[in-house]
Structure formats: structure tokens, C-alpha cells
Length: 366
Image 1: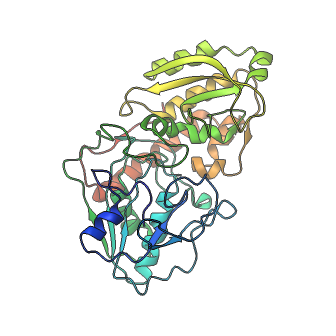
Image 2: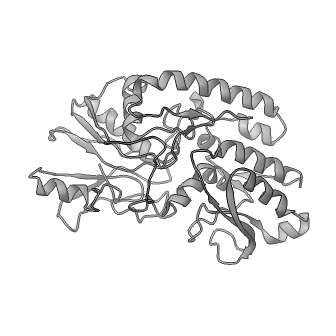
Image 3: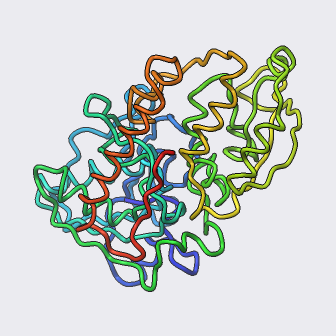
């Protein structure tokens, strides 16, 4: 179970390396974005053949219509499953859901399951809401914090210990000399998906996916600045006389470097010019994405702008209470108290699954 992120330290694909070792790889299973990572989000993946090896590629992702895992996965002729994909560090990234359902299938069919562990690009901070039971979904597969601070191997241990009724025969191949604060020393070896093509894009994804589900915000999807931009329609900025300096000051308080504001006319998901700022997050291990997001929303609410939520907004954030706060139906204190209490409880539960030091650092909402 792999894609373009399943590579060795020298940049060779894991499947090719396994072939050199004499391992008989008989099937490649592909997640969302496909085996090459080039298919756009939400697009169903069709079965294919790997051009380099001739190995059949079986799709595990059926597309945005159901956002679901391929049904009736038959593993009976396999000796074991090997999972080798790089996660983004955010719960709603669907590679985690692929991991969950793959482990479930392996447990039900008594197939050993091996995870090759990889770094968490978002470092040490654990923060944000857990998923409420009625919001469990392909983009909210389990009650993890929205930014979980775990490696894919630690998540696999959590699934096995806490979520799966049929436990998988799980082995996690750990990383040597990994520190949770390390992330990626030299940036990504390769992009995760079409809109996560750099370490900075991944940093911005820590709050940008939520923001993308709150129109009229724009995060420059499908451009070179994807998840490195915060924008609003230019005409709305003029009508509301929006003061961008206030947002710039908020960004700088959170350790972000800011470029702009500028106007973009080439953003494919907006038919009109968009005004916004580019940003760089200088230290992801001290950056609280959720506290920044709350202050950003507090800034925009002074302009009496009505948000239009995309269909999966509550699933992505993991709670209905967030939109209720935005609509004035729930106090921000009540929301923060709920999130912080559940986060601390989860941190206690996850301790047996931790493989690396330092342990995750909880960033409470303040």
C-alpha cells in the first residue's frame, strides 16, 4: 500500500527496492491521488498497471461521491500487507483512513500488517478538536485531534489498541534516531499530493483546510501558492474596507513572515480577483494552528461577513460546536473548554502508543 511518497532515503521507490531484495510484490494498492500522487483530490482512482514493474495497481479510493474505501478487499492469497505512505500530520488527510480500513481488512482476514514509519511533518504540537461520534467519516476516521503530532506508525498502534474490533497482526518498523521535533530537515523528499508540494504548504495545511471550507476565504488551491495564501474576493475587501494590516499583525505575533497583500487573478476556484497575503511559518514546533485560526476568524467577524460552509466542514473540524461559535450560538469559552478537556484526555490515552521522544506537546486553546 503505497504511492509516490513510498521511497528510500536515496529516492528509490520502495517497490523497486523490495524487488532488488528478492521480495515478491504481487499487488500495489493506491490511495486517494493515485499511485503517482498526481490525481486531484476527490477524484476516484481506477485500477491500473505500474509502468515500471508491470505489477497490478488496485485502487482503494472510490472518489468524492462516497469518500470511501474500496469494498470487499480480498487479501486471501497474500502473505502480508506492507503500508508505506507519508502522512501530512492532519487527521482529515485521507491516507489515515486508508491505513484504518486496510488494518481492519487485514485483521478480519488474518493477514500480517507491516507499517514502515515516517516523520510527522508538523512536528511536536498536538491540538484541536477530536471527532464527535456522529461525525465519523472518511475525512474524520477516528477521534484523533485534528493536528495529532503522531507518526503513521503510532496512529496504527492507536487504531489497533483503541478502535479495531479485529486486531491486526501489526508490526511497526520504526525510524532510527527520529526526534518528534525534527519533521523534515530538508523539506519533503517528494510532494504528498497536488496541493501539498512543499513543507511550507504542509505547514499552512495545519489550518488551511479548515479555512478552505469557509467561503469566501481562498487558500489558493491548484496554484503554486496552495495553502501558503490567505485571501478574500477583492470586491468584498473594497465593500467592507478590510484592514489587512490587522491580519498581518496577528500573523507576525504567531511567528509568520508575510508577503503582500497582493491581488491574484488566476485562482481557478474563484471567478473574480482575490486579494490576500502569502505567508511562511518559521517554526512549526511553536506554531499553534488552532489558536491562529481562532484569532483570524475573530479578525474577520468584525466585518459582518456570512460564511458559507462546504459540505464536510463539520467532519473536517470534527465538531458541530465550531460553526455554532461562528454563528453566535455558543460561547467561545464553552468551545475552548470542551476542546481542551478532550485533548488532555486523549493525550493520556495515547501514551502507550508513543514510539518517539519528545512526547507530543499539547497546545490548548487560549
